[in-house]
Length: 477
Picture 1 (cartoon, rainbow, N blue to C red):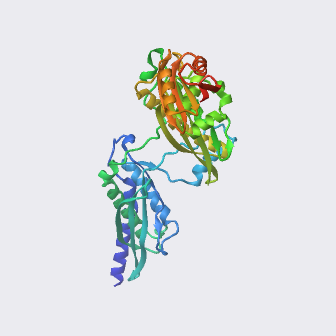
Picture 2 (cartoon, one colour):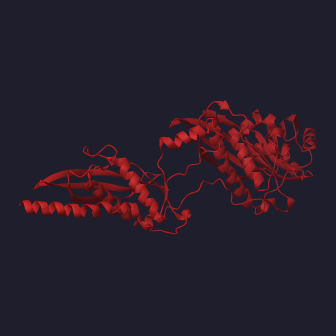
Picture 3 (spheres, rainbow, N blue to C red):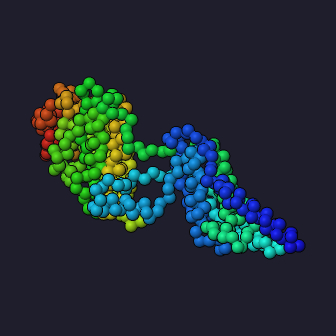
């Protein structure tokens, strides 16, 4: 018996160096998708595994996630994103604290994952058996592997992975100092992760349907490719989008500035906001924005010589703290209107986030990011639009005439008169509640038309009660 034991121990001594020298499979994951361009790889992140077995070590979930992250990155099938950690946020916070030169990482630049890879450990068992004084470690690990759509939280795929390993242990040689308790469990974990990688890479059809999404901050057109800005005949654009952070008006609107910047880069002529600074907080603009009144906005744009006016509103609001940093969300809603005929050329709303040490700066960052998306949208929409009429450059403008106390017959007579006026290109009439409204596209000044109506030259008696460069108000006697 003694001879048998000695021989068995000698066998173990001979076997140990080979076992210890063997590198773990997971550290040599093959580049299954070698050469696949990054723009064709879906973005993924591996979350810490949930551990439901009390016998498992507290760090097991993080260790499994770290090993799987490393192995998946080596396959070159994915754009693997590091999971958020306090260290990442600390570096961004330091860069924005004022203590650095600002050359470090900027908030709001992190990529978002399209797929989440995670798992749940359902079995984790380690046992030791003594046979003739020799210890055998038995290890068993089992977990559920999942692929989850990051946006919808839908579980797209799941599979159970399990491994059993039995390995001899020699007590008087320190070979069991491992992060998993024993060499047997470390080997079982390694093989299970290797299997997990193979299963994930095998989901080629699912993975290929999740191409990387890029935030739409870069327009498809520039000053060389936009048809609307070629030949030195670019339209003049007026952009006016007041901004609010919670309940405070934001000076020097960030979203508006970003839209202006994008338009200029695409070759559009853009009015300096200082020219129309006084109207930003006016009741006239407020009503146009609130009522989404394209005609009212076009009159404002015409008054300043713009061919297109982009108007709307923007707001930002705090969303609390993220790893000690202030975070905000912002939304910009706006529409582009041709001032020559009040035609709505484009309309949309975009939202984005922002982060900084200071809340107001985080709010402005969010507004700027949302404005960049809106700027790209407007450049693309305007460059692709057909039949945009220029107003400010050829002297045409849209004006409004409002006559109260009108009858249907009288309203018709005024419409006929306006259509026959020299310089009037078109007239749109709306009649309701004894009020006749006319949108008039015309060249020349509006005052002569108002004077002619006041003199009764339309065939009805009209009393003009108010007039400016783009609007006439009156009532029928």
